[in-house]
Length: 459
Image 1 (cartoon, one colour):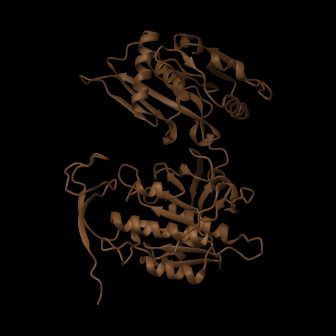
Image 2 (cartoon, one colour):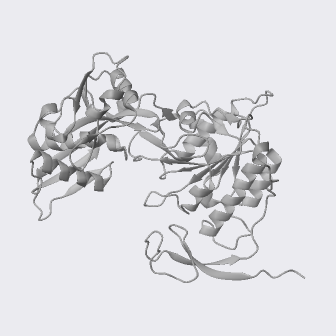
Image 3 (tube, helix red, strand yellow):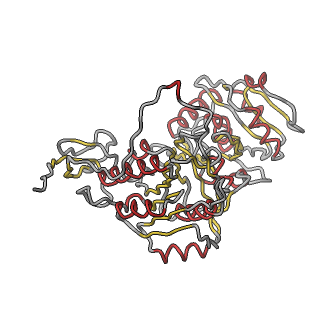
């Protein structure tokens, strides 16, 4: 006699995955309204792959054996993930529709399948798509000039069938496009629901660890920019990458938010062309408008991961026609910017109470670095006083609530990048003077200040 499965009902927030035994109008985790859906779960858990290990003493673990890395031959991608793909790792890539996730995956599949293992056998890549047919993928591959016989295509949404193909083909790299389209018949929930995504991802991770397969999981994002299905996937996988940019731009920024096998907060910059994504060797060219002195446009240097990048901060100050003046900020933290405006008003004597303030990072780049504080203040002061800013001068420094300039990190790496790109002058905190290495800094004037009350000196 067939055993009857016990079932139970509970409620799950479709935005963040928070679970509750009763329906709630507002999610206590993410604050979303009317986001709870009633789901029926089976007590019998999904168990497709056999994944187990024996306990090993800490002293017996051999650290001399390094993880095998598979290079993708795309230098910008290899750099941000730590030098290559680690066997058995699971990488989650998120981004808006049309940003280039599938295009990048096809290019990576082609590059990996063109390499060979130590025994001379080429790598095999399995591209599983639940959104496109095999013919549609083939047409996109032809547009990208990809004709690699070691790249195998599969159009399937059933997890059980995908696992069967993986067991037969034994690929080295598995690409799932996208995780929201894959479902398991053993989970009695709708395709794309929280239990489906969690159960399917769990089995794929077991598969990757047990067989040593590199797995790429592509995920849709919500209107708030998070992986749909949602944040719980970020805790399950080894690496999380996000495309951060507007799809109307011809460049793409791939940022590392989590990486168990390499650095975090790294960014890779790609340009979208008719032949796919092309890596950008010098991203500073995309974020700086060269050669002209503008009012309210200050140049600064930030560090993303280990890479220094030259960017510009723009500010526009106009008379306000509203009872409460507007404060619009793009690319940097809004609350910190409000603190900087208050400090600027107190220690320089300017009055912004009757003016609208607009601040933006050029080219849509987002940053949380505090080293851009001085550039923000200089841009606002310049726009308020209608003073042009020298385009060949770079402003760096973190500003405290007493108007003091605090020391910034990676100062020598920043100065090296500034010197390489031909800038003539750098304004930076006085506290950084003792840690600067002047070797290789040709024809650069360094001006040190200790407070933003000295802002008239630097303009």
